[in-house]
Length: 134
Image (cartoon, rainbow, N blue to C red):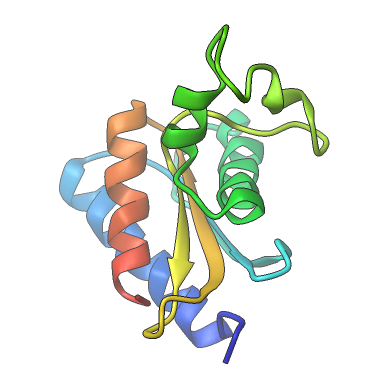
């Protein structure tokens, strides 16, 4: 199958929420399918409202380019090959917290985006969600 299932998306969100709880942070967590359509979402109690859009855009950005959003950020610095890419596609997020999700054969089937704390914690929580599917 080349698309994340609803069950897999929900599992990714659940694992991400569990990791956020372990870290003591409140997150917004979005999972998109292979076509970058929102498949599952959770806003933890008390998570920032402004991070809802960021989480969704992180997931979409990771899927659009099939790479971690933090890697896109490295490439989009002034003088970099992707400088100003964040202005494309209706707005991208080019800092950590978005991670592609692959199936067992390595095909990208979706992505997860997390926002609500420092970018290091966002990325850690996203990785926890991704790990349940890959």
